[in-house]
Length: 272
Image 1 (tube, rainbow, N blue to C red):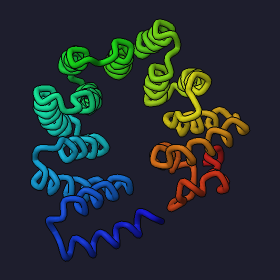
Image 2: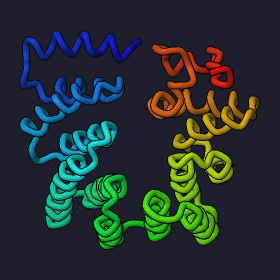
Image 3: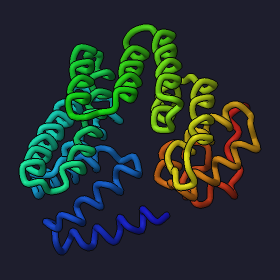
Image 4: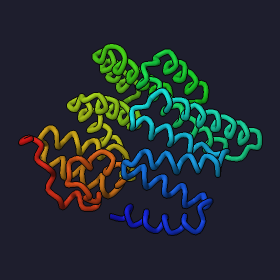
C-alpha cells in the first residue's frame, strides 16, 4: 500500500542522506504505522540525536515500547519527552511566542505518561502526573477521565465506570470528555459502554469532528449494529484514515488500505 511505497522511497533517500532528519522522522512514522516497533525505535532514536530539542523522538520511542509492553522503559522515555516539553513551553512563554501551542503538546505528553505509569502499575506516579497535568492548565474533566482509567486498570473497574458516568454528566456531555470516556471504556473491553459514550459524542460533535469514529465503527460491528457500522466506518475512513487503520485493521484482510475498508467485507470472527 502507500506506506510500503513510502518506505521504499525513504530507503533510497536515507542511503544518500542518512542524516536527513525529515526522512528519518518519516521512516520512523512508517515503521510505527506498520507495527514494526523495533524498527520504529531505531529510527526515532536517530531522530533524538538529530533533533534533541524536540519531544517527538522520545515520545514515540516510549509509545513503541508501550506497544511492546515494556512499560517501565517506556515511562523513562516519555518522562524525557515531558521534560523537553516543559523547557520548550517555558521558553515560548518567556518570549511570548505561541506558548499555547507548546502547552497543548505538553498536556498531550503528560496524558501519555499517565497511561505509561498506569500500565506499569505505578498508580502513585500516575496520580502525581494527573496533578501536574492540571498544574499546566489541563481540563479538570479530562483529568477525572484519567483518574478513572487508572482506577479501571489498577483498582475496581466498576468504580472506574461510575467515574466515567459522573464526569460525562458533570461536563454537560462535552464531546471531548465523551471521546475520552468512550476510548477508556473501549480499552478495557466495555464495548456497550464505549458505544454509549461515543454515540453521544457523535451527537454532540460538529461536522468537522474527526476523532472516535473508528472506535464507534468497531463497537457497532461487535454489537451487530450493521447499519451504524457502515455509516461510522465510512466516516472514520474519510475523516481519519490513520485512526481507522489503528483501530479497525484487524477486522479486514491483511494489507487492506483504510480507503478500501468500506468496500471490503469484514472478517467473520464468529466462526473462529
